[in-house]
Every structure is written in C-alpha cells, then in structure tokens.
Image (cartoon, rainbow, N blue to C red; front, top):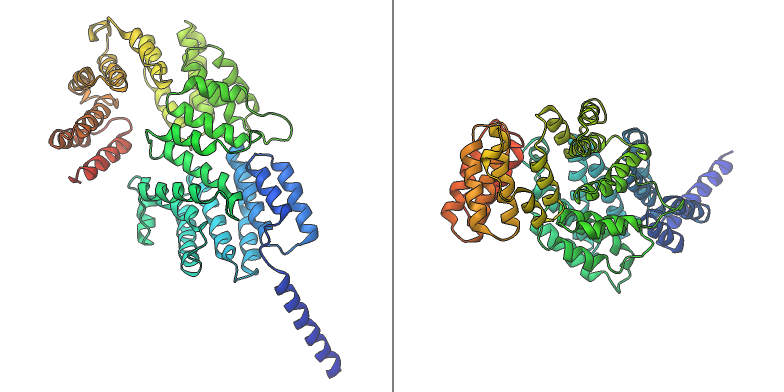
Length: 497
C-alpha cells in the first residue's frame, strides 16, 4: 500500500514537472496568424487559429491573451453592453491561466497587464470607473515590475505609454482622484513620445508583429486625446505599411481624417473599405460615413444613418444618429420629420458616449437656426470657405434670439480662426463673450478659451491668462467641466496654473 502511494506521489511530481516545462509563451505561427487576423478585424479567422493552437499546445500562454484580444476588439466594433457583461466574466479565468505559466518569460507579467488594461479601457466606455481604475493600477504595477526585470523588453512601452496618455488627459473627477490615491500620474506628451518611439523601433525586430497595435493606440490618442495638429500626417505615415486587408486600418485612417477636416478623404476610405463575411460587423463605420456626408451637406447621409441603426447591435451613437437625421429633415424643410427624430433622440439609445449625451442636450433645446446649422456642419467637415459663405453678409441683427446672436459670432469666429485670420476671429469671439456670458450655452466660455489660445500662440501670456480665467469664472453653462479643464490646462502651460 505504501509502495503504491509512493509511486503515485512520484508520478504526480513527474506530471507536474512536465506540465510546468510545457507551459510557456510560444508566439508561433498559429498565434501570429490569429493576432494578425484580429488586427484586420477578421475575428472568426483569428478564433480558428486559436482553436488550432489549443489542440497542439493547450498550455500556450498566448491562448488566453489572444482570446482577450478577440473580446476586446469584438466589443469595440460591436458596442454591445450585453456582450460586454457576458464576456467580462472570462477575465479572471484567463489571468489564472497566465499566472500558472512560465514566470521567467517577459510575456508573463506583460500578458496579465494587457488583459487588465484592455478591460479597463472597455469599462470606461460604460461608466464603470472604479473597476477601470483598479485595473489600470494593476496593469501599471505589472508593467513597471516587468520593466525592472526586463529593461530591454520594449513592448512594455506600449502599455506604459497608453496609461500615461489616458491618465494625463483625464479631467479632475472620481476616476482621476482614485488613480491618484494609487500613486498613478500621467503625462500626455510623455505617453505619446513612448508610443511613437516604440512604433519607430519595432520594424525589423522579433516583435515587429506588434507594430499595428502600437500604431492603433498612437494614432487614435494623437487625434482624439491630444488633438495634435500632426495627427493626420502621423497617422498616414505610420499606417502606410499596415495590410490593405485590414479593416482596422480603414477605421483608423478614416476616423483621423474625419477628426482633422479631411472629410473627402474619409468618405473615400469608408466607401472603399474592405468588406465581406470574413470581417467582424462594424456598424460604427456607417455612422461615421453618415457624419462625414452630412458635413458635406450631402443628403445621402440619411441612408448611412438608417443603415447604421438597422445593423447596430450596440447602445452607442443611437441618439446622435437620430439627431443627425433630425437635422437632415430640418434642412429639407420637413418639420414633422424633424420633431419625430428629436423624439427618438430623447427616447432611444444610451448616454455612455459623449456624442449621445450632447445629442440629448441639444434635443432638449430650441430648434437650431438653419444657416447656423449649415455653417456648423461645413466647419466640422473642414469646408471653411463654404461655411463662411453661408454667413457672409449677415450680422447678429439677422438673428432674433440672444442665443442665435451669440452663436453667430462664435461660428464666424471659429471659421476665421481656422482660416488663420486672427484679427477677425478675435473680434467675433469677444462679441460672443459679451453677448453670451450669462447664457446657459457654451459659446461664450468656449470663445474665451479660444481667444486665450490665440494670445498664447502670440506669446501674449498676460492676455492668455486673462481669457482662461474669464472662461473659468463663467458658470452654469453647457460643457462647463470640460471647458474649465481646458482652461486650467492652458494656465498650466503658461505657468499660471
């Protein structure tokens, strides 16, 4: 009996040792193909390669990491809150699988950090800020430890750079306060430099497969968070070598183009994007196409928004789509259609995303003036001369309400500002401040910030400081928190914060 027990014990130790030796991070061809397919948004193809690897090497530490990538990009492209709730359950199991793997691999801590960071980014889209803060803290700690153990493992820069940008850009509030208690502080420019440096280093190395991922984060953050004037040029530069079959490449290029006044380019990209059953459904691209076409005042935008609403399985951008449909109706003199869509803005979708929150606020407000709306849309699309032509020859006296008079000066100021005509911009921004400083609308406070930007660029720091402070003193208006944050950031830049 004792001999049998001893034999079983020895066999168990041998089995444990063999399992430990077998457990490793092997970024072999199956994993490479799966990873590549994920970043082309061919998620079913990626899943097939992961299953193939599971049959060959079930303890490969890249399997749970790649499964998390699948969920991450599925949720980003699908926008489904239900799917988010269902798939987030798998996080704990995947971390356990990785924790049982090869502790001597630089991917051991990296993979755990990556999973935490991906879920934090997704949670932030649905307002789960406390859980997201804890996951960011965990990811940051893991990456710092990995950096200490493997200082030459350059992929650490990706997560650390991303955390730097995200935390550096957070407005004061619960999430930033929570992260501060963990000792985490960010810096947008430092993070962007880390990501750009990594994107330049990766080509030609053994880690070159991770290039697309680094570019994905870098391009998005450069445009959406940093709002850099170089975002379009940098994005086109760094995405040039991505596969033509990558739907993610199309998304990146089109999104950044649209955000930076390159509307014609964005439409061309979206209309010629790769399609077919191999790709994950990405209804957001139809929404983006609708936004771009409406910024041309092209009424074909209506079909894009309707197609998005038909295909969409998620909860985001629904209110904003209905608001855009209401604007199309209004600009085509369809008052009944306008009101019907405004009612849908109020009754449909969610307010997780900023665009939907803003859409709901606008739906609750007065009907927009058609000329001001046309100018707004054209300016959003980067068509500055056309926007100016809509308002040329008009004055504030052509508008009946104080709200529209203030918006008129704000819109004209923005147009002149974008065209590099500072003198005219300053005059109209000042008029918007004078007229609207006691209104609930954002035009006056935003005008003060934009005036401060002009004076800051001119190195007239005293006037810049004065206008940033004017923006901060205005209270009770739309977007008060974000405008105040922008003004405080400006004061810090000129050393007055």
